[in-house]
Length: 528
Image (cartoon, rainbow, N blue to C red; front, side, top):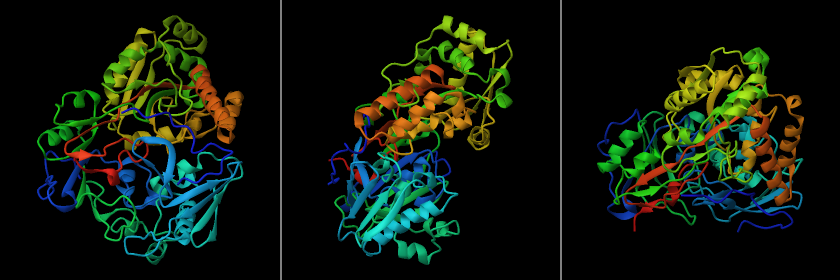
């Protein structure tokens, strides 16, 4: 599967409307069954990244997968087309400056208890997320103000052009809540909110499915919402999403008929499957990258762009890509190929340039420690294997590397607080828009983690502002392209791979990749 490049949510100048603990086998009682009305039971295996059943507190992939069919958003995407949002619970109009976005809620839509969806529910959902400053998803809405126009209309405004807003409102963290029920169960619009425990056991959305059971470590079970009255009703009597952490076990389950859909296979694994299985594969939206910290208190004399440049040109990217299997691609920049502004070509190994940059960097033969999480394979790419190949290539270029793998839970802290000196990590979009990669800029989120202040690269900082505020589509594309190019030339980041997202299924139609919720369970149906 290849997605078209994601541009922006609209062309301005138009004011348009957008008409389980890891399983080693099957679970008794959850066997696949596509017989009978509603398609029987659909079983999906995936490695869980699941923290909560509360949309406003969710910011991890599995959470988005299971919450998206429960809590509808104002706008959404269909299939694998993420070029332009389409109506969800609402249609949208935007002013010429991209600072006012008016949403008209579809009349007659209801929550799972039959309560009508109205502007008060939208207001509460957004104000609740804005008030929960501790939520990882809070940053999505901090720059957006919202007002109620009438019972079925709200308007969102921003101080500067905000072309990414339509894509932002598709994020499952902004799934619209039944405000009365949530308030009755501890919901507020500030950090005193206490509705998470309730939402971990009960769903109160307007989507085609509702929650039957929810376990952070084993499985989530969805069943149809009897009150759903949209245009995409549930096609299965039950959907069981199971935590199967090993891709090899997912493959075994699928081959043995113990599941219908496996979400975490490598390109090589899906290549082993025969014609009895349907394959959805192609580069995903996550980039694996190295970074060299630019803070001298963290990385000493090597805290300079020349060391990053030496690493960038010392690597053999084709040899690294061999580890990712079919469907993966070289990362041509910090922006993956499917997004606006991605570069056509990546860096090619140049050992002479690497040696020159290394000499200018002040490197004096010392051993550099490469830190990375070793329990979070992305698209079937094992970080330890990849790090070993990076180590070998850098050693051949005269850079001594010591590997320091650690579990994600312990490695995330030094990465986030900026104390990691030389590390390998990954980044995926918060929403389907290229602005999700501006955090790599100086003094932005990832740039700060890499010790990269704005004064170190003022011209790149200006490019971030230009890309963020552009209202002309061509101008916006140019700004993102220039931003990506500048980071490849002088930034502290070394983009490596864009792993494939490889799904294999049997007896299921509608399997497509989405950069935010991975697959749309609401679009799945028994194979025709």
